[in-house]
Length: 533
Image (cartoon, rainbow, N blue to C red; front, side, top):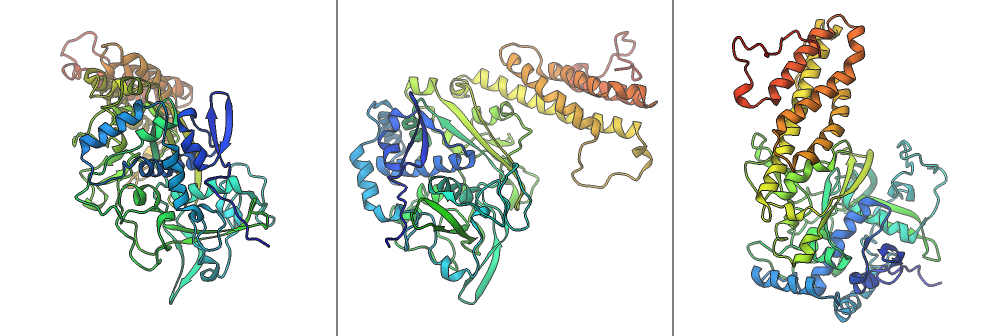
């Protein structure tokens, strides 16, 4: 019997959105029709975020915008001409690229399966099971997440098209901890390192078509020199890297966007090649990951942290609304600000007018624990915000940054004040002092913040177009949220009134202009420290 086969460059596994509905395409059709496709429509957001990165690498290859020796001005000019072209990518260049690596895009190739390592069949004594690859299915001793009806004792086959989605997500967002044991020579281990995007939130520029979107994902090479032959995507390498060797330098765009996975996978197909029925999942290298800057992540800077942890990608947080990230997207780099704009957004200021005016941002966050547990993924699509960027409208960008900062400041004051009021009101004040380190917010702080952030979002969109003092507006919203969520406590706790009055006073002080933070002696309008909220 012929070996199972599923060529991802030809077979239709990628859902895309066209003007007349949803269609499934392979990689070749996706790139040749990119100017007629609105966007990707993958129902698995982590896979979609990963696929954007793989497609950006392919886009760089077929447009020759991966040349590390190309001057920046030439690079920008070529991309601008491509963005102005209505014809999309050159079909001959697309087909020539895939023809060069024809055998490397077969998901079940016996020698070089796409994004997999065939050696695992010999090096791993035990399979992991197909459930371990799929989010929502139980595997081993893990609990069931996302209300899955699957069981670990009766794993169901996974259609090949969906298998590719989970393969992409696993390489990017895969867990750390225990996995199938892999033995290479005398070294044996079953310990995984986390995927390069685990627990992060990605920001992807989106144009009017997928063609524009992929070109907007590109950034020019800015290193000190790179051998063009050294950069390679996994399917471009003649051999799978030896797992015990130190990983090669992270180069642009192939290794950075497609070659940073620390996980090794081998899928087992059914005889038809239409389904995956089992899998080996284990480590790809025991060496630590090399430092790299992903161009679609915001990096937070903490000057107080040790040098090796001073710069870290912003973690995904399902409770954090998108508008709270706008300042990091719209402001140019500033060493005094905590967030550093994603690198992909640093070259979007020399675009054709129509492209710039319609640029939006698709956001994908995957709220995960560091090891195994996956909490929830979330997505959002911004309005056409790029005309508000600092390079185009400095006043608007500055106003947005000020409003974001004010909202965060008042949220911090609200949490501190609510926590203190809770301690002053409940029996916790007689207990030992809280332990050092990060503490969970009190019940009042949790409820007040949950009420505050939706109100703050409404106030934010109003404030960016008027001149009211932002701190005062957010202070008013914080006071309202605190009073509404703690009103019942006034009838149950004798100390609640004075404690909450002090919390309200703290919020009023935080919301007042600096010259008014202290009441003038004899001022009849100065709030009483014992005023009821």
